[in-house]
Length: 136
Image (cartoon, rainbow, N blue to C red; front, side, top):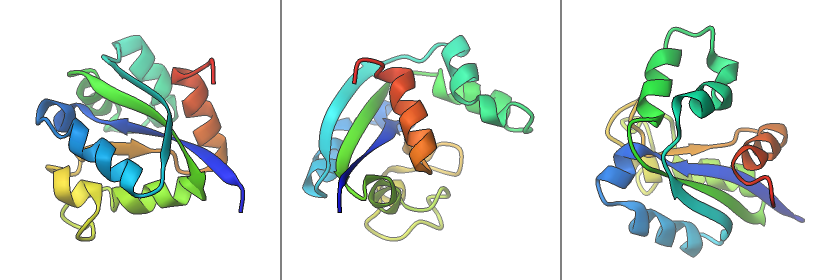
């Protein structure tokens, strides 16, 4: 199987809680290579563009407000079957429903503050990586 690239974010709640190092360590222990990483604050314009697919949904404003609320770690990750393996490692969107051992179960607070984001398909992985890492 070929190496695949995906995109991830360690969200503001996890960064503010001091979980960045632990999450990065778990990512690497699970066979991912971090090929791009940056700690940054996403501004409102970037967030509205990044989450544009959700613009018509009732939670859009809350989503933008949350992701701009503090520093995040944006990541470009590689490994075989990276998109699905990253989603498996993150766990269910709702930390209360996530499996034991997943990042969202360990570090998420609730549905909207769930510690991590990940691409859901090859097309979105390519778009999301290019959004934050145009040089890769």
